[in-house]
Image (cartoon, rainbow over all chains, first blue to last red; front, side, top):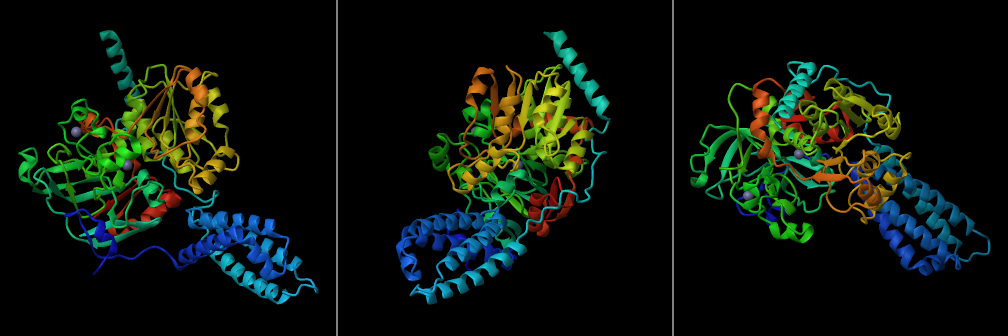
Length: 179
Length: 391
Ligand SMILES: [Zn+2]
Ligand SMILES: [Zn+2]
């Protein structure tokens, strides 16, 4: 079987013959996809805010769009990191902000209100994915009040801790006597 | 053979790979009988250490039986010998090796140009770690090639179980070196941050080296209970103020010696704003390490004291209080462990029943369950402190 990673192996080092199962779950892949989507959207919002406002008939709000772009990029980076759960919840919150901003543009005199309705629909769909991914990637750390095993008998000193302390004192006294 | 292979962030798999072969006359191949997951493996699992490539075999705490030796091993090892493999690969001949500074051996890093660019100088080659340290395949596998095997081994006698010997490869000498570097005096208080496997070994080492008082700091009840069993007074930083408790326990003087067994991924907590800032900067890739423990140690350490850092740091740390460090006249000692400098003495202590490092093992599973155990160990599920894998 061909494995891309084998190309960079030093000659003679073990190479992959057959891959084992990955522990990555579908929700991890979804989180990853949402993370990249977030960064992509953020880059567009940050570098081409005018495009966005024109499409939505909301000219004049470029600064807000830029700020939202920064937010999207940050949430995206977080969703790709080991703290992906926090990143996904940040995205859920961000979806709320997006929806609120779009609703404010949904006025009777906006000629592009069709586009806004479409955008709202998209935000709704993405928000559902964000929420699901956030639910499914909850950290699996045990809760703080969970029952835990304790290890009060594991001193590591087969002859007991007092004997370890005494031996150390004797060695110290011996060393002091020598100098 | 089967081996635990790194495929990316939080993605370690038990793959089938080709068996290792003798590449150099000084090589030996061992059949692994036990290996372990180390805290620093978690930094790799999180992809915080630069220089990992998909396909790298994990693991640097390994022991086993020699099954093949190269022609240059020169009688120092033979088929059937039982050895523990130190995580630092050493040549035994260079200037640093001769001084006992094994972890900065000048010969064994086969990708030294990378390390020289990043660190200024190269350090020793390491098993199952980044390509900055040679990218040598690790020992979480059925077989391991040991380069420079004539020097890179600790021969161990039959009759003592693997569990008691395995940690000579890393965590026991690492905790020991951390304590030795403190120049412990009989009146000293030694404060130890982090009660993971290395912290547990540092606690026992500080006791064996005659510290008057050992204080251990963590937030997990199971680890604190194990620390207490080893003779430490404990502080739970989630429910108590570390600064106030340390003051109380030292009559206001502060601990003379401080040991950082946490390293670059310190706990992030809303009540410690610097940890939040570090995490955010780490995510934006403007800071690689989260040095909260270093800051706290410099602040609490008694003037004239020593700070010892076995915890792993990989790159750059911000906002270290150099003013306090300088004016208090502190000394900092750190480094990867010079494993073979300590192992003769430590093996003797194990043989004489002075210490039994197997106390730290909480989970023993087959190698194939390794990937799950990385998650269990990382999430601190099931009161996990140390995982041993059996190929
Ligand atoms: Zn280690
Ligand atoms: Zn050397």
